[in-house]
Length: 187
Image 1 (cartoon, rainbow, N blue to C red):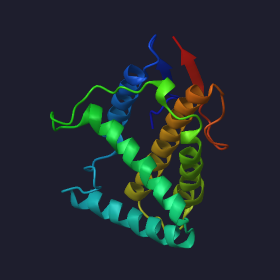
Image 2 (image 1 turned 180 degrees about the vertical axis):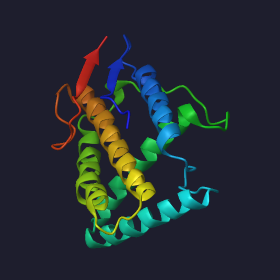
Image 3 (image 1 turned 30 degrees about the vertical axis):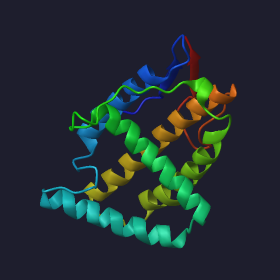
C-alpha cells in the first residue's frame, strides 16, 4: 500500500508536531492513491460507491458479532476522532482548519494512550482483519478498501504507540501482528 514505519521524533523542546505533520502528509499521499472517497466514505462514482457499500455491509455484520463494551466504544471514538483531527489539521481542503500541530511529549499523561492502543488493536484484530478475510466480501474494490483500512489502522496504532512510548519512556510493540518496526527517536 505504501505505508512505512512512522518515525515520530521530538524536537529539542519535546514537541512532536513537525514529525506528526510529516506523517499526516505521508498518509495523505497514500490516501490519494487508495481512498477515492470523501471523509464520510462517499463517492460520486457508482462503482466506488458500490464497493464501499459492500464493505460497510460486511463490516457492520462483523461489528454486531464482536460487540465492544461501552467503555471500549468510547475509547475507540477517541482514537478515531484523534486520527481524523490530526489528519485534517494538516490536510484539510478548508484552509481555516489548517493548523500547526503542537504536541509536547512532557505534557502527555503517562500511559494515557495505552488503553487507546489496546482498543485500536482490538478493532484491527477482531473487526478489520475479519472483514478482510470474510468470504462475504466480494469484489476487487471492496477488498481493496478492506486492505487499505486495515493498513491505515495499523499505521495509526504505531503512531499512537510511539507517542505513548515517548511519554512513558518505554519502547513497546504497537501490535502483536504488526510487521512494522516501532521507532522511537529523540533529536
